[in-house]
Length: 452
Image (cartoon, one colour):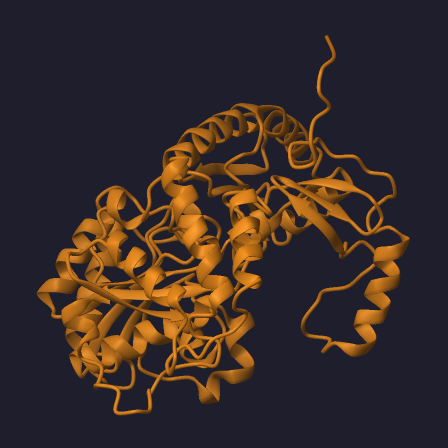
């Protein structure tokens, strides 16, 4: 009896040319000549150029095969090029490539919004479709201001909500903000996100007291505060998981002070953290939810959902919408999103993410328990962070960057996170095989333990 060869999607790494190979280096040189130097990071060991991706595998232009532990920024929770998504894309592409989303909408727009409102955490929901996570946040912030009449916002230290102007105003990192501070809205009060460990700062009680103070005293520019925006788990800050009970009390405080809660679930939503929405098991009770990444199945699509009573604060369209875009409700994106929602439901993706994530977390903790450079291995479903520290117990600046660069040479794609680039972030597809997971843990642990 012959044993079937593993299929591309479930392969272990196969490095034919030390990354980046010659073709990738040539493409990097060409790209550097024509793209703004701010966009793609290029040096002698970075980047590789992707040619093909399926399941948990990526193949680059030099023929190297990798395991994608980043899930392509967390998008590929159900794997790259899932057959159901590809099929939906192909069928839709043969019928309608583009519509007129807010004038003469495609049918898929209606069907998708109905599905999204059906999974919203409230009875009676309405939604706005967008093309990027940043825009979904922009819609959420606009919605909150219209509904409350209070322009001020509470956001959290370490928050990442996007880089368009409204989203950037509630994103907390000088690296992103410094060139644009003069243009950013000054009515944002940043409150500490409670610490995962000793490095990360304040306790939950201290953070909640600072939240109460901000809501009562108003924003730094004097504006009254009408919205609190928060990630259930901070992703780009380094997979920062809130302490037990924090989100429930935050919800109580916001409600008492008359502020709307915006849950930025662009990274955490649709199963990534082991539940359809990460807010629910953590106790967060949002009034507005932003979704993205996983939703489009690889197509650019996000959404802002809100209670109907809140969304109805927007004025009636009189023939000219006051927030829209050319590609709103794009037929291809709607078709793939509907396929994604089917897959998430039919394959119990949140439950699978919880099981696979728990196993991966246990294996990583076990293999790294004696490492002096690892402060903590933490996670929520298939969002896992490995926090690296110096001998003095401080964040190891660019330690995770070094891990990511070394991992690439061994056929693992992953990303650094945290303000200091000191957290190894893992957000792989849910269909990562047991063999791929074991191999990834062994290689990653070896790299980290050899760090000096």
